[in-house]
Image (cartoon, rainbow, N blue to C red; front, top):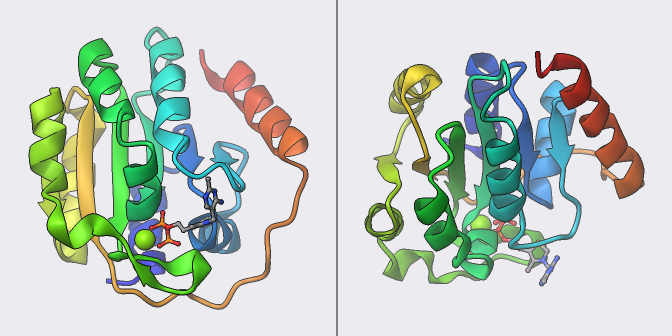
Amino acid sequence: MTRIDALKSIVKIFPCEPMVVTLGATARELAAIARSDNHLYVLDSMGLPPAIGLGLALGLEDSAFTKCLVIEGDGSLLMGFSTLATTGLLKPSKLLLIVLDNGIYAATGGQKTASEAIDFCTVARGCGLEAAEIEDEASLERELIRCRTAPGPIFLRVRISPQNAKTPYLLEDPVVLGETFRRYLAENRG
Ligand SMILES: Cc1ncc(C[n+]2csc(CCOP(=O)(O)OP(=O)(O)O)c2C)c(N)n1
Ligand SMILES: [Mg+2]
C-alpha cells in the first residue's frame, strides 16, 4: 500500500473529524487528494503531532466529533515517543493515532529509522493504548470502520511502501493553517 492509498482510505472513512497531519510528504499528499479545513497540517514540527492530538482529543471529549485523528510518520513518532506514555495515562477516548510506517525518513533522503527494530504495537499496548498492525488496504478499511465506534485511545501501525507521490509543496503560513483549523473546530464541535 502506498501512502496515498492509506490516506484515501482514512479520509473516506473519516471525512469530517479533526485530523492532525504530520509534516513532509504526508501533509503534501493529503492536501493534494483531500484538502480540507478539518485537517491541521503540521509543517516542520517533527515529533509533535501525537502531543497536539492528545491535547485536542482531551479538549474534544464533550464535542460532537466521534474521533480525533493523528496521522504520524514512523520517524516522527520515534522523535516524540514519550507522548505514548502520557496518552496511555490520560486515555483520551476519542484519539485515533495512525502511524504510516515506511521504515525510513522519506522527507530527508530515505535514511532508515529504527522502525524495523521496534514492535510499536507492543509499546503502545504497554502504555495502555489498544493497538493493531495493518499490512493491506482491505484490513485498513475494516479497522478504520471498527474504530469509528470503538473507544480509544487506539494506535494503528500501517505498513506503507517507501515511495512518495509527486505533489506540489505545501508552503503556507502555519498561523493561517492553525486559524483555519481552529475555526472549523469552533463551528462544528456541536
Ligand atoms: C526536529 C526535526 N528534526 C529533523 C527534521 C527534518 N525532517 C523533516 S521530515 C523528516 C523525516 C520524517 O520521517 P517520518 O516521520 O518517518 O516521515 P516520512 O518522511 O517517512 O513520511 C525529517 C528528518 C525536522 N523537520 N524537525
Ligand atoms: Mg517514515
